[in-house]
Image (cartoon, rainbow, N blue to C red; front, side, top):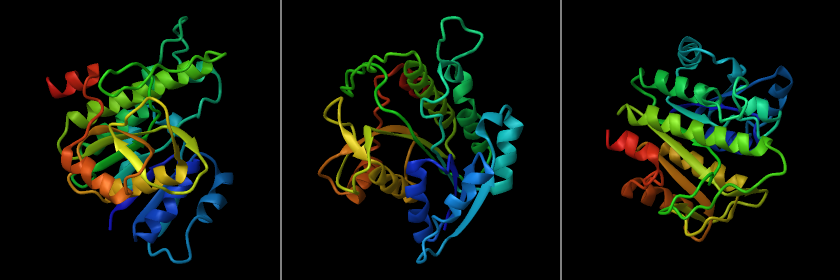
Length: 270
């Protein structure tokens, strides 16, 4: 079974995902940034899990070069990577914006770990999937029907969402440039602590909606095992469709909600 590398393993969704993968007999390497997080991650291994869990202490903010990204991949040798790392809006605008930019435009440096890992994955034969748990709507896209990013009382959140969307774009470009792996941005609605349920997956019917973190983890686990997945953006809300059927449909139809965005034209029409 595949060896799955989880980047940002201490996050809530990643903690739901880890036991799912272990129960499916996957080997999981969970990357966390601090030693004191390790007991929590090791405690995620279920008694009925048939997979193997490894914990790796690394800060993704230190992935400052292609060589460092390649070093992580060479050490772990994953078949699939789940990129679920991020500051969660913490740390102020300067953490998410270019410190040299007085207007705090979204910095591409926030997205560089994803791109460097994507580029490094493209040099390998086996990795086939990079599902990245990403935020939904940041701007209007007519076909997708998603609304503008909500206004915030501080500039921290706009910088955070802009940086996250930029990360989606650079990973999409990295995936689109190669045929040996798929870079998928799974873009959930407002996250809740609810139970696993049905989904609205792919192109969603509206700009607003919720989805539980447990459901996001279940969908991600299915994507890891999906055959024929292509580089894409996939939106996710609570809905009525069975998760397995929804994932099969999205893969079969090649659903990509990036269509209509500049990055889609840049990659697909180049």
